[in-house]
Amino acid sequence: MTTLQKTSPARFHHIRVLSDQPERLVAFYERMLDLRVVGRDASGIVMTGPARGIIVGNAGSDDAPYYAYAVRDRAALDRLAQRLGAHAVDVSTLDDPLFEAGAVRFADPQGRRFVFGVAKAAPGLEGAPARLQHTVFQSTDLENVVRFFVDAVGFTLSDEVVDDDGRLMVAFLRSDDEHHTLAFFRGSRDEWDHHCYETNEWNDIRDWGDRFAQAEIPIFFGPGRHGPGNNLFFMVTDPDGNRLEFSAELERVDADKAPGVWPQSERTLNSWGRAWIRT
Ligand SMILES: [Fe+2]
Image (cartoon, rainbow, N blue to C red; front, side, top):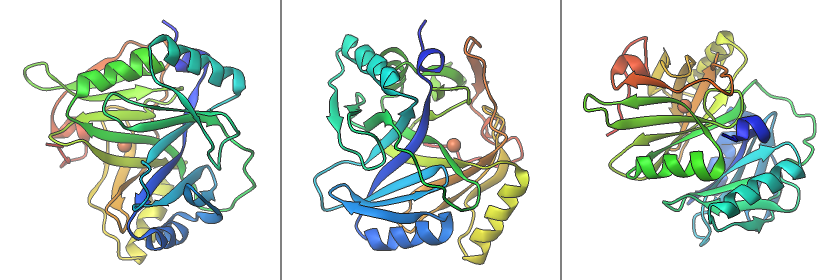
């Protein structure tokens, strides 16, 4: 089957978040993530750093947050738009400050907004290693959203977590060679779970941990190692309560590898110890 990984690899590129206190959030991402304000436009305050970007919009606007993935060129974007059209997905174009003109926007079956585009050339930026790499959601309609991202968008199922009755609890999806660029947990609510920054190695996890310690921002999950993806991680929150993950050693997966199945347990979500089980 044709997949993004095989034909149009897509990497998680930037996010647009909405905030009641945009300036407070901007100050956090400047100080803690080495992001810099590069512009202000209708979409919000545009911030970039090395291999990461955030647009902070005003929660008062009637617009939605979105999650943006970069493909390598216009031809790849056209292929994706065609695929979405063939699955009767309503597609529109969007002017995004970090993408070339003609970025493609669509909503998943539960209304989350996604944007795919070709990244504008980024200036050389300094900062600690943290490449924006994946995002995760909790969903009350897990099977349906996973089917949408596999069939209509072209993600590949890397691993699934199932409960004792065989019911799907978590699905990890990839759009390039990395184990997951998107994942969904079964939840009692539909909410944004977290976004993740991939570092270069374990020592970077230490350094990020020390940076948050200095700012007196406590780790709420980890450090540990996830079963699916095999990555080292810890998680903190920003001032709005959005959850950030820092990761290292995320597994790379061949395009034709069959999905793995993991039991729903603390050890699956954190082989080092206690886990955060979403409910
Ligand atoms: Fe994650």
